[in-house]
Image (cartoon, rainbow, N blue to C red; front, side, top):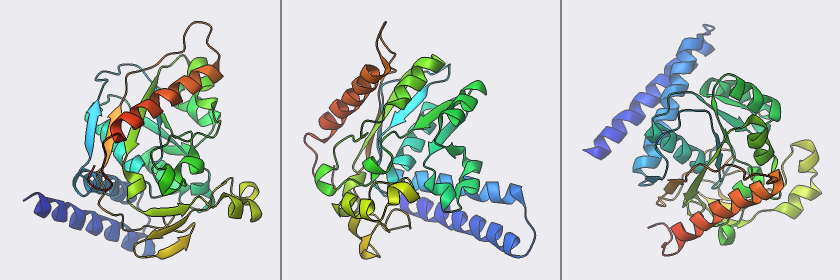
Length: 285
C-alpha cells in the first residue's frame, strides 16, 4: 500500500509539473501554476527520501518559537542533494510556525534555476540575504561546507567539511539567534565518488569562474563515470538509508569569539555524525 501511495504521489507530481510546463511553453505564464508545481516537486522529493531512503529523523529539539539559524551538512551533489531533501523533511516534522529561508550557492543562479527555486524559499547565500530573512521573522538554513562538503569522496563521506568557513557563527552572534545543527548521514553512499576533483577544479579555474573548488569524479546511474555531472543533473541514487538528527540549539558563550563558536558547532555536528555512523553498514544503515 505504501508503494502504491508513493507511486500515486509521483504521478501527481509529474502531472502538475507537465501542466505548468505546457502552459509556459504555450505562452501562458502562470506564476500560481508554477508555484504549485514546485510545491508538488518539493513534496514528492520529501516523500521520496522518506520512503526510498527509509529516512529516520530524530528530533532533539521540539519547540522553536523564535527565529533560529539552522546549520546543516551536505551529502553529495549540487542542485540535487539528498541532504537538502532530508533537512526539509526534518523541518516538516518540527511543525514550524514561520517560513525558512534557504541560503543557496550562487551556482543555482549562474545555471539559471535561481529565480525558480526562490519560489521555494531559496536566496543567494550572503549576509544580506540572511539579514533580510531574519528581519522578516524567518528561520534561516545554511550549509556552510558548500561544494567542499557536497563533493567529498566516498572515503570521507562521514566527515563534516566546512573548509574553514565560519561566517555562520558571526551571523548568529550579530543577529542574536541560536544555531540549531542538523546532521544527515547516508547520502554519501547513494553514489560512488572516487575523488573530489580539487586539482582539476583549480586547473580549470572554477573557483574564479563559478565559485566552486571541487569537481567530483563519480560513478552513478545513469551517467556511469562522470566529472562534475552527477548532482548537478539528476541521478538515480542507490537506496542508502538516510538518518537525520536535529540537535539542541546552541548559543555563543559569554565572551566566545565567532571562530571558536563555529568550531564548537562543527565539532558538535561531527560528534553526532560519528555516533550515527559508528555501527553503520553501507546502504543498510
